[in-house]
Image 1 (cartoon, rainbow, N blue to C red):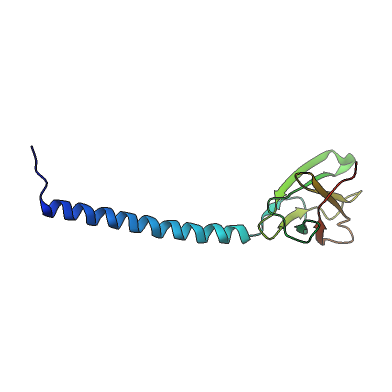
Image 2: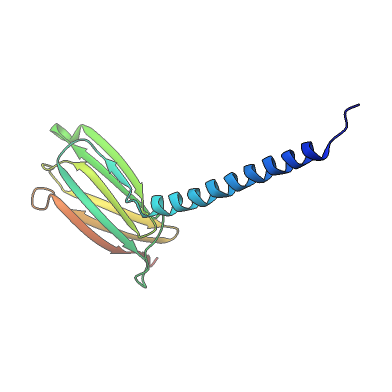
Length: 143
């Protein structure tokens, strides 16, 4: 049977303390990274044109909404035979961006923003406004 000496016990305690200290340092760094990631503006690329649409989504009181969903359905080309559905969620500041939207489209583009029972919509005609910027306040829809 092996006996534990004072030296072995001391080295084990020092090693465990070092591992815990490194783990706490990594956790603090992960918290900083998640804060930085929540400020990064989510971008989704449609890949069918040069236009963009930037959104800032708030509630009725003007507070930014995190993870509000913005959806768009685009029918394009001859006879609208090509279709594209895109969705992006907002960051902690209520911001999101669509890139790669078509500049020539017959009927314009409708964007729908929702979070829970709150909703709003926006319309853009990329032929006249290729770099659209929207500030939408989500509200409950009357039924």
